[in-house]
Length: 252
Ligand SMILES: Nc1ncnc2c1ncn2[C@@H]1O[C@H](COP(=O)(O)OP(=O)(O)O)[C@@H](O)[C@H]1O
Ligand SMILES: [Mg+2]
Image (cartoon, rainbow, N blue to C red):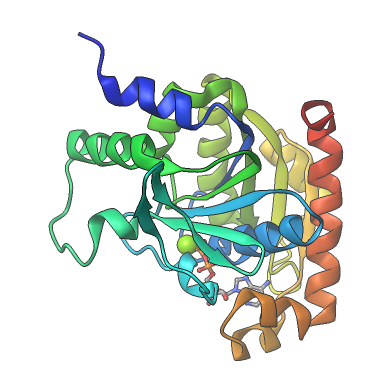
């Protein structure tokens, strides 16, 4: 029997142009910071964008947005929250403060429930902030939306980060998920290789390099972090340009 949630989900997500996953091998490398910053800039440029936090363990990326309106149910489904022009959604809405660890199957169920009720509307970008590594979330998205998916790989320029992220890159390639490129974060703190070497090491292009900006920590929201740290803003703008260039064939 066909699961009716799959039909609902397909209908609800049919008007999403691009689903971009932010992935890494390890935690703490900047996925949440960079994916929220990219979501903010895309929205500022007039692209309809949802930032979706799919980190089951600690959905925290949504805390980077000052919410003008919370997620709420409506006639057409669960509406995303709003932060200025950015639409924000989080799996935290489903798991609340539930301390129970979810098994793989349960996690798939929660994802199906969530995606079948979420009302995304017409979107240019669904930006997905993932937990580290490749878990059920990625498998789920790959199964349901493979033709719309692409990935930005976030790494530090350290041996440990590169070794773990390489496994993720291999997985993405096997699953035929398009890789937009790698972003080297905190590039002034870790400097194992030259960018060309990082590219060679990972077998993908490096599309961005983001410096560690200590000031960024002083501000709570991604809007303030960007607008009050112009160097950070500039680097993210450049990353967004690169991403748009790489995705342009899908946007036209
Ligand atoms: N380029 C950067 N400049 C300043 N702080 C950063 C930078 N990248 C990450 N951080 C900080 O490091 C911490 C971990 O980043 P986070 O985005 O939460 O990582 P992840 O989502 O990969 O676990 C956060 O406090 C974040 O603000
Ligand atoms: Mg995170």
